[in-house]
Image 1 (cartoon, rainbow over the protein chains, first blue to last red):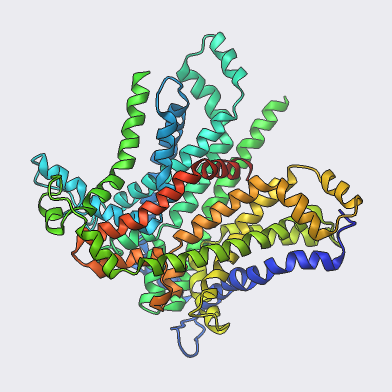
Image 2: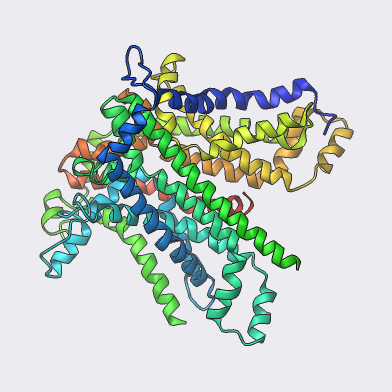
Length: 298
Length: 270
């Protein structure tokens, strides 16, 4: 609309956003990158140390522990959460199941709850001594109860479970919406041709929902990299960082031990990792889509 | 298919049980929670009484409400104006428009944690530290990207003929935006408001980093302090958690249809 687009008007419309965004998003990213190259400790001058922080990170055991934990949660979420949410969405669509509407609303409820509160709630579910799970196991007569949180092995898996508990409804709803938008005629034709439900799902539904699977995968990946409150509440980073994830370790470095430069280096690494995985996924998804398009054009 | 129903109910049960457990525990005495939590005798409101005496819930709610209302109003207005400019207006140089668009959308890839420390320094430098603004400004800044994504997507989806007609009838820019564009965009605007409100309400990383004064504590920050505050008074902790949980769930129950519709709108178009 060029009649509206005087320079003045454009400025008026765009400047407020810039005033917030540039100083508080763009500038901080640049500042973080800068600090990551120094040995800043919060006060006084900073000393430029180049890539030392990054090499130290490479040799830092705790970094690799938190990296491993984040990886465990990521794999757990991708393998369990996305397929399970998809199956649930399919179940929701089955008209013969009563109460599907109510179930949908209930399963979605955790998405709204503050993550910090979810963490607190699950302390009372998973704690080895006072948690519901182990209390129930005890009532059933089992005495060798696993250490769900606070122990060395199960903790990342437990955190992953809590993350899935909170996010399941969200991903399921996205699939449900995607399913709603599929054309009914294709399925009717398939049924007429004798295709079983199982085959219809495998050969029609899933390929048609390719983009939705893509969106959900991206959401889960970026979501896992943002997990912070859950770990903060459930374990506080675990005995000596055993259950730290990348973000909570970074928080510890920056705000608890005041090693700002080092902490910012880790922040930059996290940023690059999540952007990297994100782009990798987009890249492979785009390739697949182009291949489909090419086949469709033949 | 009976199997489908059973699986569904089972999953719903697993999802609900933690919440029900918390509410149940909130009526129990702390020592009972440790020894015999499953029994339903001796339930009382004692925990709630002690919570009201210790935690200033009113303050937490007030602070959170201020942050939510201010940040949502500002970010939606700002993003709305930006999105309209990016989709409907012609720029002197087409590169400026795509450049701006890339600038704002790339914010989606930035994890919040990388911003914590620099924003902390900036708040101090701008003398915002210790005020509501110290949080409102970052909340607005980090949500512009998402809002812009949704709003530009929505705007791009329908042509500007109505606006053109309004302009021909003598409508100025402000009136155009307020009386023509905004009503048309209501579904997208509602979605964006809900997302932003939930974000600000639950926000923790910025809150825990930037809030030092107890008088500014938000609900999320308050919850994180329950464990330290109540130590082993589990009953009180559960009562406090329930008092935070129930309003959130009530809000959800009221707006449930809109929330879910908004999420799907965003996911499918965005």
